[in-house]
Amino acid sequence: MAAPMRQVRGLRGLAAALRPSSRGYHAPPPPRRSSGPWWPDSEDPLTPRWQLGPRYAAKQFARHGAASKVAPGLLWPTPEQLRELEAEEQEWHPSLATMQESLRGKLLAQEQKRREREQLIAERMAKMPQMIENWRRQQRERWEKVQADKERRARLQAEAQERLGYHVDPRSTRFQELLQDLEKQQRKRLKEEKQRQKKEARAAAMAAQDPAASGAPSS
Image (cartoon, rainbow, N blue to C red; front, side, top):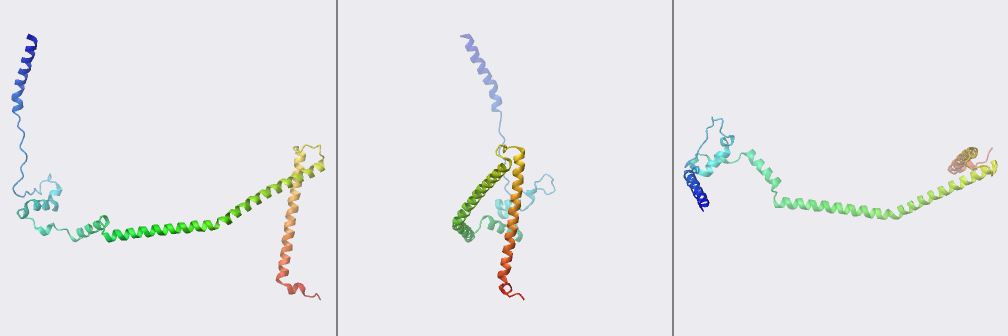
């Protein structure tokens, strides 16, 4: 029992020792506002710059009124400041008529864009059957060309085998050289045939343009 009692007495003594110091603290009173206007020293370099401008003067006039000895006319914005304020108001706070006009312009632009898109879709849909037909014709021509090349090469291989004999391997160098030579000869014949057809077509066109000269009797 003696030990707990000594602990209690020790805590009480500690509390008694701390009590006077805590009671001796007094918080400083809040700062008091001056009853009249206060103007900073313009010569003091530590004076904030905003306290030397019209903002501080307007604040003193708002707080103290005529006692601040601030001329109310000096608190009005200058014509340049008024123009800046009007421009800012028109940009960030437009009138109802301006907002309606802007909305009307946006709606008209969206409607015009929609009509142009619908017109483009209609034009492409109208061209779709012809485009499909052209695609099918190209596929058919490509297939016909592939088949014609296969048949032409088969004929050339058959001709080469007839010349060299069927016992010659088509993969041999001799057979491939003969096949290339036959292909060159065939291309040459086709080229000559095209040139002949062009000449005949040109002559027919000249005869059609001058039928009197072509039908005139020779002397």
